Amino acid sequence: MTDPISDFLTRLRNAMKAKHRIVEIPASNLKKEITRVLYEKGYILKYKFEDSANKQGVIKIALKYDPVTKASAIRNLSRISSPGLRRYASVENMPRVLNGLGVAILTTSKGVMTDKEARTQNVGGEVLCYVS
Image (cartoon, rainbow, N blue to C red; front, side, top):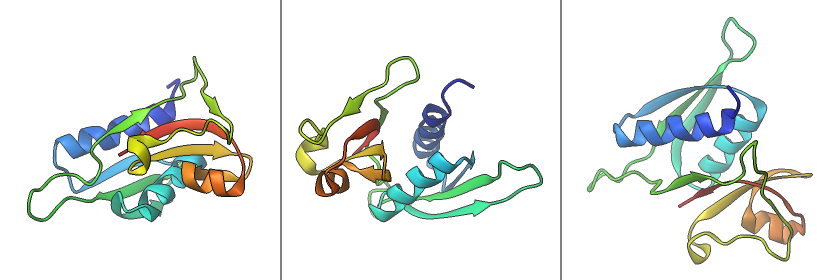
């Protein structure tokens, strides 16, 4: 697999389209941090990191849906930076998703964070994905 982050996002997208409650994804440290950011911003209901017999482990994510309309909390999930074309943003040209209503997830020298947190900490980094 050449792009595990894209695989992570695709598994989330497919599970939401199929209206699954829980999705299992092979774990890595970067995927765990992205999951933590999604949870902190209210896009997923719960998550759990499970260590399995192999060293990699599994991330179990409980997806969040609206109780009335049954619509997913995540409307759009798109990969921005890919292994073939890395996208970096400085503090001056930090992206805004849906004019501030969405979230851009970045990996910086201070860890994985949202675009708003990166602006307050005055750091730039690689733009991994947009969530809205």
